[in-house]
Image (cartoon, rainbow, N blue to C red; front, side, top):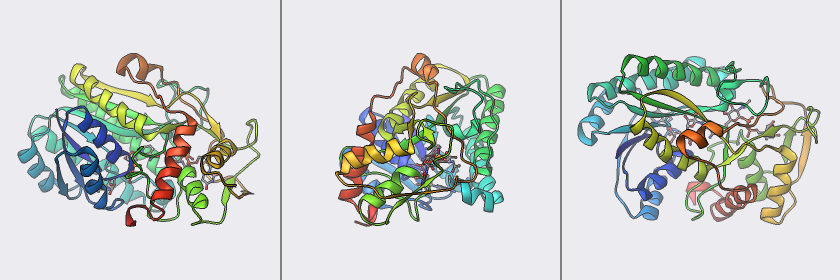
Length: 337
Ligand code: NAD
Ligand code: UD1
């Protein structure tokens, strides 16, 4: 299938392109490189030994999208392009709604002009907010607690209305839990531009000596060791979920959300211990107060993805930490190395 991958130079996009190409799909990337290095596609091309069409441009630019639609004529779109920092979204709400929501509208209009009616969308478990029950299934109420989370839910609603209005259209909404890890080649991985907001890249930077210690945000949660519990998912498993979602979109019309997680959760302290095992060093930590907006615990009920997409995660926690360490130690400065 010809697949347009928006945000394809990013962390999850780059891993997904490799899986798509391995399955024989033709890939075209649109990215504005606001949170990615052009080096990413050089490395992905070398790893895949294949051709990737690419356009530098903004998802909100209708002219660029029309050019891509005319030249590449995608049969499906995987839509990663967007902004994802929760704290920044509270400070710049209009910018987040513009990129994440208006960007998706611009994309859907451009797809419509060439009759492309299949989309796989990057949503997030953050749409659930504080869970009422665990594991969290797709029927769980949605009440996101940040601008970022609301922007994801707005797009989900738009996709449901779009699919309802076009009987042949298919929108596969993937609600990712906590993506971590890196490709086994050590050539691609997560490369935060600034101080990492997320746990795993922060631990990796402590392990490689770029930061002194990890601050644990709260050890007074109602969990076994007092620290937050999350469902971490290896990025290669997540990438494969997109390939499965594309196949599903070719078979089924309508808009449908799927949880993409392992169904297991680990605490912050579990993650620190697992990373220590992987890198053979102690990870210094300090306990601080809770981070605003954090929840105690969440993990996925991923039964729907198993039953309907035929997808399950196969990587273990040790795979996640070992691959993160292999990437970070081979590329201490990320794509600048
Ligand atoms: P990322 O920042 O690495 O990738 C996003 C890509 O989109 C980047 O390459 C960036 O340059 C590009 N981009 C941003 N704004 C753009 C614009 N206006 N026009 C064109 N390109 C633009 O992030 P990621 O971790 O790979 O996440 C991909 C998607 O998955 C995002 O939509 C994110 O919200 C969602 N998501 C990520 C996580 C996570 O933990 N990483 C969790 C849930 C959902
Ligand atoms: C965060 C976002 C979520 C987003 C997801 C992307 C918030 C409130 N939520 O989720 O919307 O979809 O990232 O992966 O920002 N932790 C520390 N020290 C750190 C960093 C994190 O103790 O330096 C803890 C957190 O308190 C949490 C766990 O580690 O218990 C995981 O944090 P993180 O990786 O930021 O993911 P989420 O908070 O689940």
